[in-house]
Image 1 (cartoon, rainbow, N blue to C red):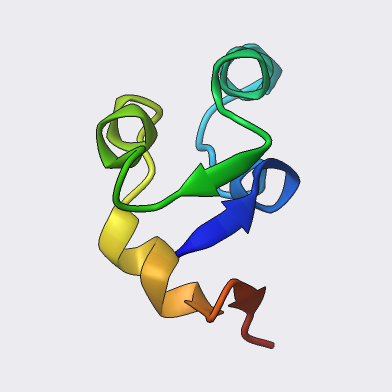
Image 2 (image 1 turned 60 degrees about the horizontal axis):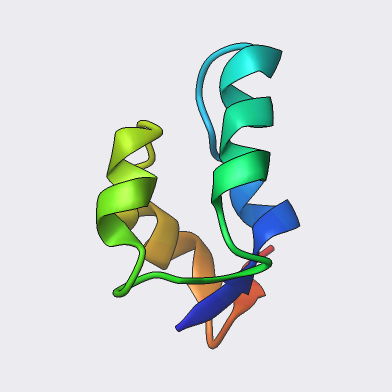
Length: 60
């Protein structure tokens, strides 16, 4: 499942430094499976993230 980087950045814990670093290193379209290690490096729980999205669209 691919999710736009901008939506992923909402899930990065920590301050603006961490979000800025994630913005630099994450691809424009983040593939949850391919980029799971990188997401984990930024403190993002991939399982929780998957629960928030359905087919690449955020659940309200």
